[in-house]
Length: 135
Figure: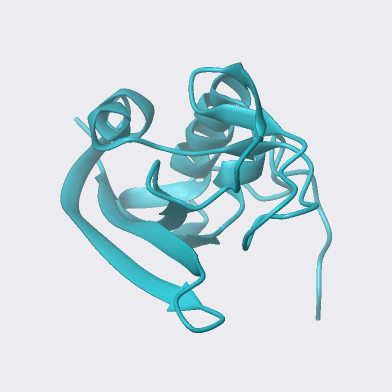
């Protein structure tokens, strides 16, 4: 069955999952909401559970004139893979521990990069694997 819920208030009990997988969800949330989402993911993970996150890096192609509304947060992306997606937050390497490392032990950070349309657009993503710390 499929369950629809609010990522800021997941409809699962604490310690429910062994692993949570994020594929391009966090990038569409401001940093403050992303931290709330990560807190909720932490809550629903079992002790020693894994969190896998795939999110766009600050090397993403956003075209010539995206409107930056704060550090690495944009609206009105008119070109490239994120064209028309609304709000976009890119993540620099330096931001990863600030966003993910407050609750999680970051196990690995890798990057994948590829192009579209004969090299016209660059897509660059972080692959982040974290483990739930517990005491």
